[in-house]
Image 1 (cartoon, rainbow, N blue to C red):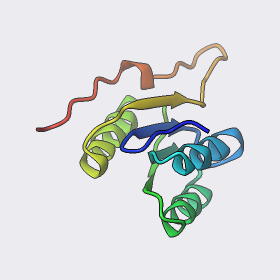
Image 2 (image 1 turned 90 degrees about the vertical axis):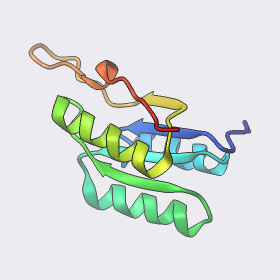
Image 3 (image 1 turned 120 degrees about the vertical axis):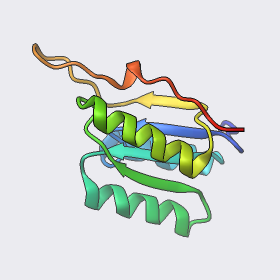
Length: 111
């Protein structure tokens, strides 16, 4: 197992499947986990599970195809955790006409 104590990870598509297991794994390794997803019920449940197990987690409802949603989620993540060290872009839109905007966000934290 790897050590991620005092690190903050954003995991897009983190509420279900591979994203959910990634969030659990990172939390067990000591990271605070920001779960970004549209699936609110499983995302909230996962954040609660991690927190009840002694970890730090928060769910943010975000559509990564929306620049407005991504900016809001980035701001809320920084407000909650004060920084981001790791981005796991588990969600990707690859079919014609869509693009993933999460790669265009610049995160700034306050001292």
